[in-house]
Length: 283
Image (cartoon, rainbow, N blue to C red):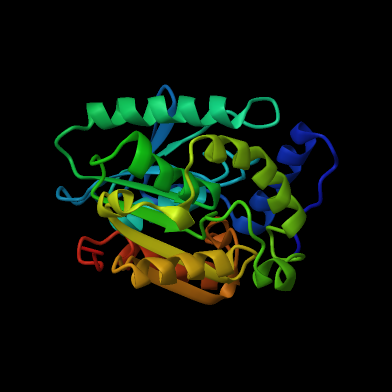
């Protein structure tokens, strides 16, 4: 399956993307027992059965700061919450090009910081997919250090300057194509460059402050090679993140848990391992 191409209109493109996900990714199953609580700036999915010792998961969705919403992610969020037996709170953010990356990230940072203060005393996990993975790393290291017990990066954006071989191999027909990724990078790169934040150039002090970290990579993904290279670089610096690789799955596979058994199985494995306190720690 190849994702829809751009029409030149962000509004139309977003609507087309949401229809695509609804058609091929599945819809909310009301009999799964999960419940949804709408907050001022987020939605919290509570599982059918909640483990009283579970962490509170704060989630930043992907979409390049251009696409998607917490509504699009509802089937995945409900699946994740039930698998984890933990509440999963997901945040929307302002979209480009109507807003700058600075406006989007700074507002998101404020909203997540407010929730972290409100949840003080409970273990907090910050997680995100694609650009949400990059934002998770940035917030966990720079904006909200020493707040989270674990960071979970799912097929994350990690390199805004280099196109590795996977850009060519999986550049078309695997949900996230290279042209869309180039567009997303043009939105993101000025913000992170201005702040001197590069996941491939973390300082020793930043690395020392990195919480326990899990990284999920997909084999059929333009972002595959940067994810694998980052995991290898951290291992070479004696910082070993917990790593899961799904060689046969594409970018955005979490959005297809409702209809693709392979995606559903992968999410089950991610929930069982990536978010676990027993997952390997780099320290």
